[in-house]
Image (cartoon, rainbow over all chains, first blue to last red; front, top):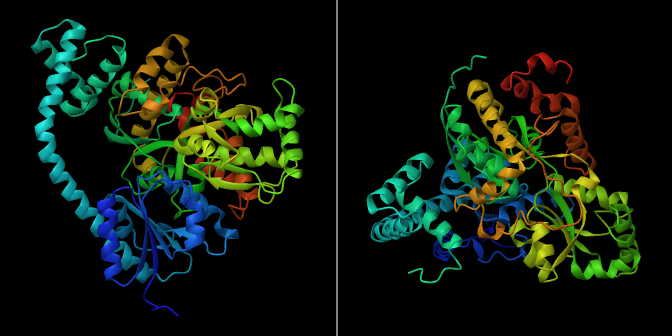
Length: 204
Length: 345
């Protein structure tokens, strides 16, 4: 019989860095972990084969609905899984999980304190990854944002036949109307103008 | 008519990138929210479970939801019970059953031109009886019209959805590639995933949700009961803005502009671009506005609860009480100033 504290955990996450970090953290706690990195349609089979005690999944994975379906149909399966929040009685840790972008499905009947310890680790890893990425993106985007806005301005000037100041004002107004950042609006302008002017040569 | 001041004006609403998120996008882009004094940010969610969880835990004020979702959340099916309500239906119809090109070819000797669902079902039943393996069908989410319509049609065709076929779940964005890999023989999903399969030759739209349940509410605007109680004026203002967007969408002259707006990067993916060029012969009949479209009808709530019970998702209970608690046509009527007529609804 395996160590009663050790659980089989399946991680579904398309961010390899984050999945690896969580893999290591849970391994260090003595759990047996398997990572599923791709969005493959074999997920149902994999869950049935592995029969994990717990599945940890990135909330933004479309496969969450696949797991929800499995949970709904699992009455007839040998090992029913349920959505973590269905059993947890502590709504604070569920809120923390949702804010961190992590959700979990657990085998029905699993002790909540053991599940909670794993959840806390996952939340910590997701949070750490998030702040790391935010920091990185901030540095990177400050560099590229100016380029994007410049490009959008240029395309607008050509498309609308307006001067630089007018083009900039248009972007500013769009950003305010949509409560978006200037660079986001600039990117949408580029995407749309590139689509509408596809047949034209000499884009750059 | 005097309009009460909204309790909250900065709002975040969730949507899933499908064609029927259009009312939310249009209400924002064409200024219908702004006219009501609301500043709305739209949050794109990649699955239905997120919509339910983020609305339940207050990360979203409200969202586009599958019509059974507020009922399932209230009953605690698949999640902790969170009482939810809907005061507005956003769309009707829009689903279809697509069979793989290979399966449809195999059935076609027994089918006339433009067969009805019963004929397709009969042909499929015969095909299954000659096979050793079960065909695999996919749907997206367990508490959805798509799932119930597929089960309903199979059962009506004398095919047991639990024993004669294998039902699996696949995200909508992966339906066509999964069919291409021959992992599934058919699926029931919303648009544009049926028209797209037909366009790229992977599948054939064999029947539509409209043919199974004509004029069935597909998506609703859902909020928690708690949120609705705390923000009655905001809720009504949102409903008015969304109804105006639905009406705008119903004018053919606006379709080109609507698609242009839906294609904006924050909304639908590039994959949705061919939509609007649907050339399926069968009536998908997706509609956003018209008599009986937007009022959250009790009969639809009853139908959904009946399906949940029939397929063993819900142990059953007082359907009428739950339908009335969740599907709030009184809120709809009040928002639009129709109270005088609502007694007859």
